[in-house]
Image 1 (cartoon, rainbow, N blue to C red):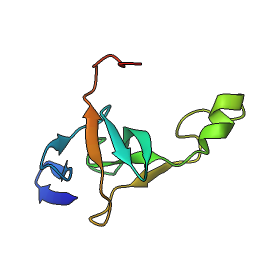
Image 2 (image 1 turned 90 degrees about the vertical axis):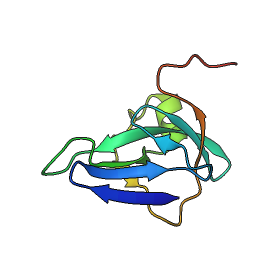
Image 3 (image 1 turned 180 degrees about the vertical axis):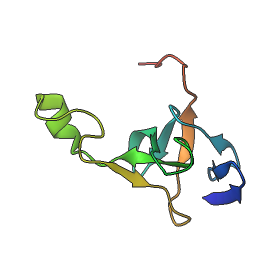
Image 4 (image 1 turned 180 degrees about the horizontal axis):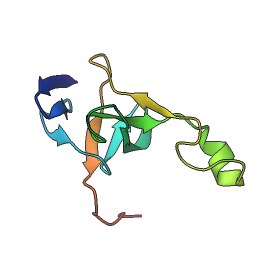
Length: 91
């Protein structure tokens, strides 16, 4: 992953150099993950990451997405965009 820092915040690029935005879906660590913003003192979308909440808890109704926070992307992550925000699921 490439992270470029600008005056407007961080910009994230996947392994194919496609820019990742809030609401996109990425393939990461063998799973589909939705991209969420992380609130910062300067901008809502200054940082992006994936849901830290246990997915099985969400499925069982024990928690809601992002209830336990968001894991911020870092340069060691290897996400690949598989769906852009607003695109319908194929399945």
